[in-house]
Image (cartoon, rainbow, N blue to C red; front, side, top):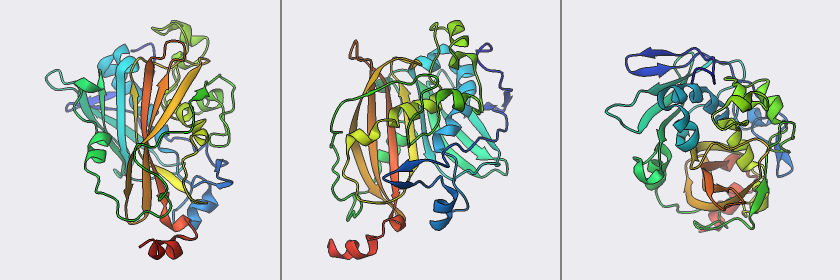
Length: 319
């Protein structure tokens, strides 16, 4: 896909290696639930983090040139990128993406991203083809191995199988501000994206295999979360959350700029760790004209126990 990206790639011992990039932090003004998010420096420091981190799916862009090199246009049409976030990145730090090359015709490879000093940013898997044909992804394996939850506080009103309150309608136009969760537009993101491509623009998209501009993979996450408040999942708060794991799957991709889609949501798992309570949401994106599923996302919303003021009081009262 030499006409899609100019990212300089190398191959080292069966691994495709991307360039070192310094992704931008664009969520400093993010707001949800009436308060600032963990991407705000002051909020992050209050919760014990060094600074407001860059949002996880920002790093997805760095994998696209690698996976397009491996699988060509099929990657954009039926590709899946599945990740477990390991360490936060703050603006100014360098990050590099790696992907194994397929062995013996395999349709799935291991991927990872690292900081310049070798610190893991994320580990994951990438694949092409229908979900039924693929080995379980990194995120699917994690969900399958989750321990039963014993006592949730912030998420105690949630249940596996709970669905969003309504079917949501979304689209992404080039200059459309994507709201309080994502206070920027696609064009503003394209001015800072680590791996630019003419296929992401109105004019350059005419040269893509689909004849129009496509939504960058990291912005599929933005599109999918744009109307997430409409799901009205009863999460107690105020509390601060972060993305702990994420998977984006193209079923009949890619997604297109300026096109209408509908969204349905379902909670597919609940979990907890020492510091977090998590709800895992599957988001299904459909073409409203045909009703066909065009993409899916699974997102692990990890809510920080320490950010919920009443946690220590309510936890013993629950049992």
